[in-house]
Length: 306
Ligand code: G3H
Ligand code: 13P
Ligand code: ZN
Image (tube, rainbow, N blue to C red; front, side, top):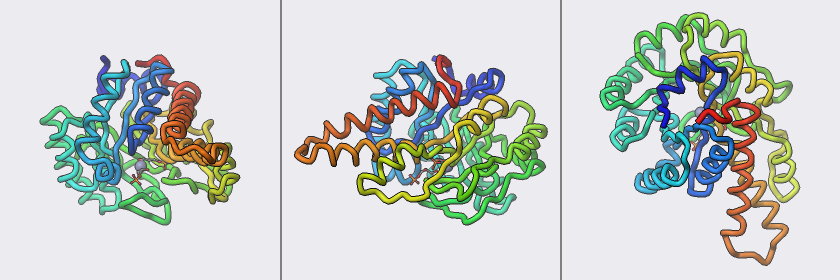
């Protein structure tokens, strides 16, 4: 089976990227794996600190182990937005394939010091480290920011040299959650190209990259949901980032929540007599699987890269 290390280089050389999909339960994980198996794609299955707490250590590890046993594709377990050395150490010790240390809200030198500490520990155990530089607008469980601070190319080079991190998440206009843009969606590819000139062939990461498909928003809104004005990153922009830039990994969480909830809300209305969870969840799993397969094939360009 191909390693994550292989994909750091191959994805840049051959112009595709890996989906990093967040999971919070068996259903979401199963949908992600079914979708990735359909397109024969590698993928990272990500666990945020909030998701780690929600599922608990044993469920995270055993759900992932079951997924690896069931699906014959390269699957990697990734810690998303680790906020402390202790959390990253825990994930490394538990056997995660890679960890993200998110020091993006810290001053540059403190972010360097924290990231380097995680890199030194993780690399000794053969675990890869993603770091972040620049600030994404939006809200997560543990961070919120009301404006973008784009990654500076000179800082990116210095940061990677000083920390030895394996991949770097950059801020070029994406943001977390379902409300990314008020007007036209735009990404700063000029800033990305500048970073790529400084960090030649280095694998970069985009967070906050859900496209917020309007078909899901409409289904949710017409079945009692309230997501007026939700807007994401156009798939064309993401495809450009994957195929014309050195983006190796694209994070998607919100879209899976939307896929899940559109299936759930529509079918709760259509089957008011049903109280069998499995019937609803089967539809939600299938919706996630179809969505992941679509993204892998048409946006991330990673079909048949397993
Ligand atoms: O980037 C953040 C992910 O969407 C995780 O969100 O912290 O609510 O689990 P969460
Ligand atoms: P979205 O909210 O755009 O799905 O971003 C998810 C993410 O960046 C997880 O780290
Ligand atoms: Zn993120």
